[in-house]
Every structure is written in C-alpha cells, then in structure tokens.
Image (cartoon, rainbow, N blue to C red; front, side, top):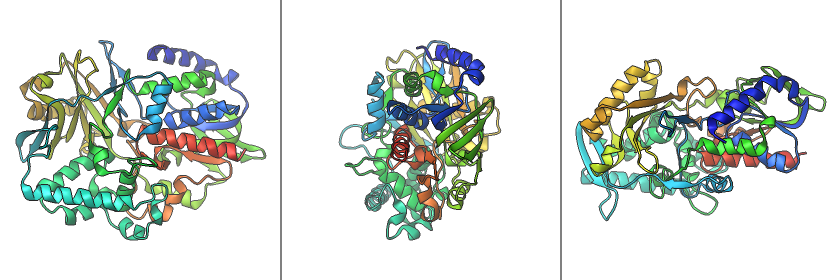
Length: 480
C-alpha cells in the first residue's frame, strides 16, 4: 500500500477509534516505532491481544520517509543498515523489502584547516591524508578502543572490573590523552558526533566502549570501525523504498485495527487485574504494558504507583542526542562525475559529515549533511533558510560550485520533534551506567521497557530497536 494511502486509511480509523477500540487487551504497547511494532507482531503471533498506542500520526518513530514532488523519498531519520545487524536485515527480507549498496564509488573528501583534500577508499592506501604521527596516533587509539570494548559484556557493561573507573571519565578526556595531535583528534570528533549526535565530552567512556561492543552480534565482536565504515560497516546498505517501509509493513502485518495513532499516553495506573492506560481519546485496560520509547520521553508519562527510583533516576540522566539532517536535492548526483562518492569529513562548518542519499538509479542527486551535537544545538532555534545558507557553504567547500544551487531541500530537526526531542539515541554521561544501567531492561511488575537504548547489540540503530521489541515480547510471554 502506498505510504500516503496508508496514512489516509489510518486517519479514517482514528476518527472512529473511540468507539471501535477494545476496552481491554492482554498487552498495551506504548510507542509505534520499530521496537513497539516488533513486540506487537511477536505477541499477536502468540495469540495475545494487543493495542499499539502511538502519539504521532504515523508509525515509525525516528524512522521517517519524506515524499518528494518527483515521486522519490528521502529518509529523514534512520537510513542505513549493515553487517551483523541481523534482525533488521532479516526483517527487511521477511517483509519483502530489497536493499542496495550505499553509493561508495570514488574518493572521500577531507576538509581540514580550511583545505580540501581527497583520498581513495579502495586499494592499499585508504588512510586519510594527514601527517604520519597523527595516523599512528589514530591507529593506536582505534586499536586500544577495540581492545577495551572486546572485554565488555554487551548486555551488562557495568559488570566489567574497570567499569567504575571508565564510567568516571568522559570519552573526550580519554581522547585528550590518546590523541593529543589535532589532526588525529578531529577525526574522532567527527566520528563521535556523527554516531552519537553528542560531543566526546558528553559521553561516558564506559558507555562509548559499550556502544562499540554492541556494534556486532553474538559471534562477531563490535569495533569502532564498523560504526564508521560504509562498505562492510553500519552505512553499508539502504532499504529500497526507504526505511519507514519497515514500520509500515509491520503495521500492515499487525493490522491497523490494533494501532491507535495520534494518541499520546498520559497516565498508566495499576488496577486489580493489570493496568489502566489513559491516553488522549482512549482508555484501555491491559494485563501487561510495554513502554517502547526512549527513556527520557517514557519518563513524561505519569505512573501510578510510581516506578522504582532506579528507573526514574535513569531517565533523569539520559539525554537525547542533538541531531538533524539537511538534504539538498539536485538534478543529478554531479559529484559522481567528479570522481567523488559524496562522503566528506570536516573540522568546521554546520555539517561535519555527508553521504550520497541519491536513489539507487541515480535519477537525481541527494546530498545528506548531518547536523549534530553542538552544531545542531546552535541551530535548533534558527530558521530553515538560515540552516540552508550555512549548509550550502559547506557543500560548496566539499563538492565545488555545482553544490551552490540545489533544486529543493529536506530539513529535519529531531530536537524540535515533540515526540522525539532529539536522536538517534539517548546516551549516558559519566556515572550513569554503573549506577543505573540495569534499569534499562528491568521491568516493574507488569511493565516492560523496550527501545533501542535497551538492546544488547546495535544500540541506537534500527536493529537494536527490533531486538528490544522481540526481547520484551519474550518477557511478556514468559510472565503471562
């Protein structure tokens, strides 16, 4: 079903949900992103009655397709998938969705100290064009990070013997010692803001190591390079038709009669035989409840009785990353003709990293610029025209004068989304994981917590969201 048609149908359903929604279900699921929908489909398959209650007027959460006038789409949220992301790859196949390789032919651009350099991503010499000492520091720091992450239990990083030590410092302070040379450090800074939408000074070192450890699966250790790489890494492939189709088709599989859109949940109260879930225009009894939301947003629901202190303290301490995407549309992906793959890394500008987000057939050009961390915070309150003006400056620096005249734009600021307030993930500053980490997954009586933040693998990614939904579905079935 065409995406817009699905929402039209959903709109009709919303207008009658007050009288057609059941009064009681086995499981109420708060949140219609990939975590909530994955849990719902698993539970429905086990003959549990479910209702997904979603605050937005669509499914998908931080996965969003924006339709273009030319019939194409831009993924304004999560976009890429890669090796060891087993659950999202499997789900795409189950739902009949194809994938294609992220465009990666040609040279990368490095904008450093006001100078544009390019370098190959193929062949024996793939290192960025920086001085030898900086390259040595870069390689040494990467090896040390991967070695430390290898020791981490991805499901319980707070159990490591050095957990308190590593959780007492920021990733930035560790980098101060590991990469004192600016040419090595700035590459870590760019990678960090692109991955976490946070600055190295924001992140606990333990959390960073846990995130690296999670960039794998049960048989393949995570590495920092897998988080940053295109070919063979987290940016390896894209979903034909856009990633929101994962959520749309899950919703179709579940049935829209089991989904209530535009229904923010306000209150969850314990009653004799379960819970009463109260939302805008909906009151529902449920034997169990799944909260499939980021921890800081889940905290805005009023719980009665109140949740355990460890869970509430956790939600107070996990901020969302600051993330936006600026996509400039062009008649053609002209950078390809110039021998570039569309990937740039920079030490200045509003956009510090870019990707070619053009369609598989290259019928038009789409240049994606990530606006993240400090740069997004500076522009959260600016106009779209101000953002476009700054992004164009960066794109011209990276890709030349042809970048100066896009035909149209897609600007998405997740910080300003009422039911997201940032992205791609809620991260942990120092002192959080060792004191409150277990509460990421711990349920409370009949309430269970899902969301990509609670996944053992691929935290912050679609794969992690799906894994978390499947985990809570299993929990619910085991306690029914």
